[in-house]
Every structure is written in structure tokens, then in C-alpha cells.
Image (cartoon, rainbow, N blue to C red; front, side):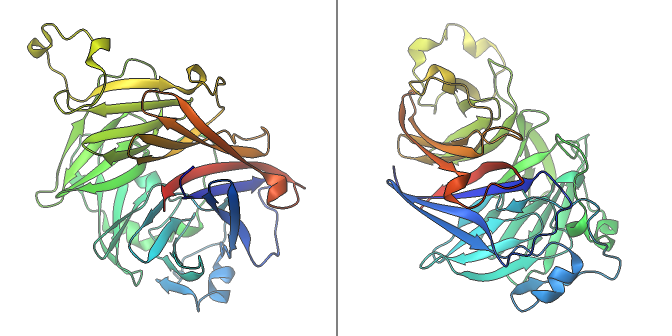
Length: 356
């Protein structure tokens, strides 16, 4: 297996447990069969932020900030990189980590970072989503908010400055399932556009940064899906569906799927956006349906994804390597007993991954 960095999250049976460790495991470096597990500090409540102010860049807790009613998970969510650093999202900040030695450089945080999913680095900007408010936030490397806008259900774009008066970092989700109208869980920049993967509608919402106009980018899904992550690679999009599917979509004339599997006679007469194909993991040589499927990475003809790790299941998750025809090439699993004591742990889930 290629060298990959894998972000993972974990939680406890007691959501209000107060843990006193200085650092918690959150990053797996996988190089063939070798595993390196890295741990980092996770300040969560207001007093934690004051304790770690020397490493936090950005906006300190607002005067109105209150401690969590229900403590969030530990660990890293979305991951991206530039030439020198990995950038990993947490519940309420972006961790800037040296690619040379995986040491923490800084935690970039402001009051509009909350429940981070996918994150994006574009030039000098860090782009995150305030998921519960359907809002795209642009932050500079010092943690200052440069801009933000909200996508409304009618696809209009607005800027709600009242959002800035709340310290969203210290609000946790009190229920299972998606937040926000769209539940944007992956963000990327393609040209002058922001592409947002919307789990609740199984499509993209695309925003032109210059005109501040948005549109839907849809696909001819042939199966029920709950899209989670979606990466653009070689003029195609690759998605995970949390029920154990990989979906590949692209413009018909640019896509690399096997056209012998499609009936194309007369298709030019119909409206079609992205054309898709589906890989069901249980139908590959892996042979089992995973109980979860989340992060995705593409390298040449290889697809890497994280599987398993739902609440109250086996305390482990897998990193599965497939080729684009659906053949399972390799599988590596991280079990919690490789990380530490399983006492009171409820779940561990691979969230996102990145080829190094």
C-alpha cells in the first residue's frame, strides 16, 4: 500500500467524561505494513483554549463562549496538505502539522470553526464549513476570518454577520445524523468555483466566487446513496457512500468507465449531468459489506477509502485499497488495542485519508 496519512476520531461511552491526558491519538501514518500512530493535544472547553494559547493561532474564545453541554469526539476529521504541512481538521480547529516529522506547528482556530468535516487549502486560505449553518468560511493562516457566505435552500447566497457573534467552537451536536439543510461535508476549489458535496441531496452545490451565484451539479445515480467525501481527480469525481459504496462520476465524454456496460443509443436526446458508476464493496473480492465508509483518496488507478467503525461496533477500522474496476487489492486494519486501552471507548472511525 502506498504511504498514506489517515485521520481518525474516537469517542467514549460517557460523553461528559473528563480526560486528563495531554495528548490523544488522531493520525495514522501507514507505509506498506508499517504503522505509526501520532497523538496531539485537543483543547475543547474555554479553559482548555486558555491553557494552550501558546500553540493556538486565531481568535480567542469570545466573551459569550460557554463550555460544552456535551463534549465532542477526539481526533482528526478532514485532511489536506501543501508542500510543507499537513492540515487536519478537528471539532473546532485546523491542526498544522510538519510533514517532515509530524510535529504540531500550530492549531488554527476561530469562532466559526465547528464540527469540521472536509477542509481545503487554496493559496493562503483555509476553507472550512460551518456545517450546521450551511456556511463556507475562509480563514487565513493566522486564524483570522477573511470572508464567509451561506448557501440557502433556494440556492441564493447571503452573508449573515450575526453568525460572527456566536462562538460555534463550543457547541456540540446533540443528536445523530446530519446537521444543516445541505450537510456539506466536503469542500474543494476547482478554478474559480467552490465545490461542496451535499450529503442530504447527493449532489454538488457549486458556487462561483466572483459572481456569488450557485448551481447544482447532479448525477444519474443508479442506487440509493448517502455521499460523504468526494474528490476530483483526472476530470472525474470519486465519492464514498456511507453504506459501503464507491461512486465514480464524470462528464460522459470525459469519463473512463467501460461504455460497454451502458446503453448509449439515443442518450443525446436526454438531459444528463454527471454519469456515474457504482462499486459495491461487498461485491468486490473484499467480500463483506462494511458498516461505514467515509474518507477517499485517489492515486493513478487506485482508490483508497476508510471503512467500518460505526458506534458500538468492533473497535477498529480499515483502510481498503481498490482499483477502479472494483478489485480489492489490499486491506489494512487499525485496532484500538494498537492505540491504547479500550476502557470506556465506544468507537474508533477512520475519517479521511491522504496520499503522502
